[in-house]
Image: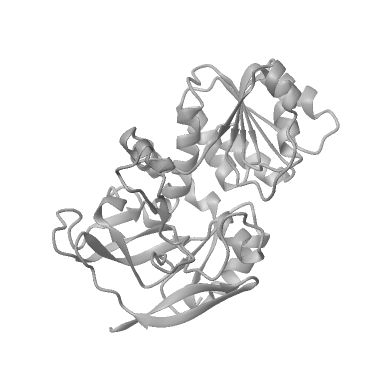
Length: 345
C-alpha cells in the first residue's frame, strides 16, 4: 500500500481522519506498523481547548505499540518483525539535563504525537516513524493491550522514583483514574507502607482497592482530612496529585505532614493559588512530575505483564471512528480508550 489512514486533531472540538502516503524510514529511523494507540487525557484536553501547552491542529498518538515494518540506514535495533512500544519524548542528548540523565527535562524536548508543527506525527496511523532509540522491545509475555499502557504507567513510575525513598511511607493518591491507578501500582512497587486513594467516583475507588490501595476515600466527603489521616494512621509523607486543579492542591496540602512532598502528576489546566505560607512554614516540597526517562520505561515494561488491562481499557475503536473514540475518552475518565487500524468497529 502506498497510502495509509491517519487521525488528525483538526481544530478545537473536531477530530478527523485523512489519507496520507506511507512514510519511509530514513537514517536512524524505524517504520512501525501500529497495533494499538491510546487516547491520553492530554489529547482530550487539547481537542477541548483546555490543555495549557498543546492545541490543534496536530497528529495524535504518543501511547503506542506495534511491529517493526522497515528500518532505515544505520539502524541496529530493532529488527523487522520485532514487537515494540514507543517512548514518544525525543531528547537532544546534549543539553545539561540530558547529560545528567534527566532526558525528560531536555531543554529541546520534542514529542511524537504532540507536535503542532507536524514534524513528528503520532502513532494514530497505520504506520508511524520513530528514532530507533525511542523504541523498546515488548516481551513475549506482554500483550499488545498491556504494552499500549506502558507509556502512561512510566509517568507514574517516574513520579514515584523522584518522590524519594517511599519504603514504608504513608502515601495519598488524589484521583483514581488511569494515571491515579498507575500511581498506586508504582508507589506500591516502590515500597509504600500505606496507600489511600481518593476520587469522586465509587467505581474508581473500588478499582484502586483491588489493585493496591489500602483505603479509598470519597474526595467530596466533608470529613476528607480526618478520613484520609485515619486511613493512613497519621499525616501523609507524600501525595501524588493526579488531578492538579484548584480543588485538589489544597486537599493535598491539608493531609501532608511537615516536610512532606506534593507530587504534581496531573497536568494543571490553568494557573491557581497554592497555600504558600504552609509551603514555606512547613518546608513542603512541591515537585513537578514530567513524563519519564529511559530508566522509567524499562521499569514500567517490567511491570507490564501484571497490568489489569481488562479493567483499564474501557473500549477500542478503529481509526475511521476516531471522533467517536475521542468523545468517549473525554466522557469516560475511568478507563483508557484505544484506537487501532481499520475502518469498522
